[in-house]
Image (cartoon, rainbow, N blue to C red; front, side, top):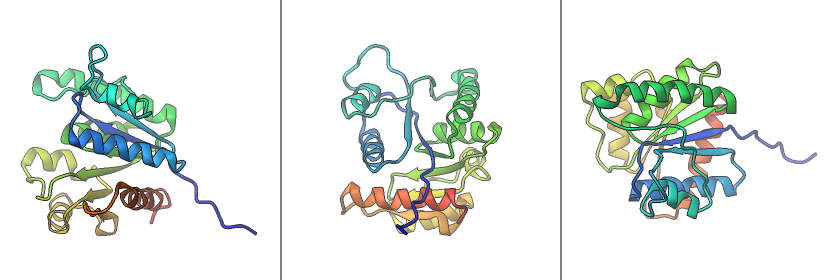
Length: 202
């Protein structure tokens, strides 16, 4: 009898950016590598007007990651009704595509994804990445967005992660520290293992 194959959960990465940046490049490359290993994964990003060469949408396609662009993901109080519309549309997407894990990379992405996840029937897990070597400032608004709406944390600094999981009440068992000094292949293995543990309830 061969080794047991662990089922891979469906994942949606939510990137509330339209302009190409180091963060966007990292997220797109992570998604591409996870897909190459057989993970079922989508990337949602802000839609760009036209084929702007410095857009996330354009560069994701160039790297063979077809983005989901049915969400606006526009920050600011002026866009509050647009954001509420994003929550409704993402709830529909989560249920239609049976998404099990939402991986967010900013406060806006976290707000939209986590609130959509709570409305969806499947109640997917929410993962957050902090790309800084410093903890996220635990402002009142950020605590409201994240606390109670988070199951796992990914970061690049042990000290930052220790502060983040304390400030935002994240289970330490679901905190993953990535080493910037190693290739993204090592990051893929750690993130994929986190996804599997969440899906299996560990």
